Length: 43
Image (cartoon, rainbow, N blue to C red; front, side, top):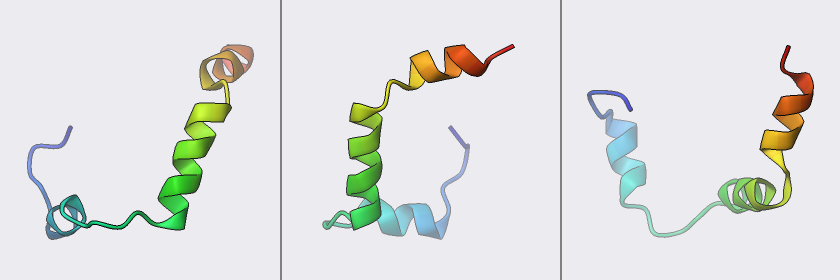
């Protein structure tokens, strides 16, 4: 975690509505087996 928050961090910290991008990325996190995929490509 960074030490100091920016104005952008403060603005987005209190927003109420989630964007389509955030919803999509959360769905991808739940569906894609990231640990298995990264294990395949790590040297």
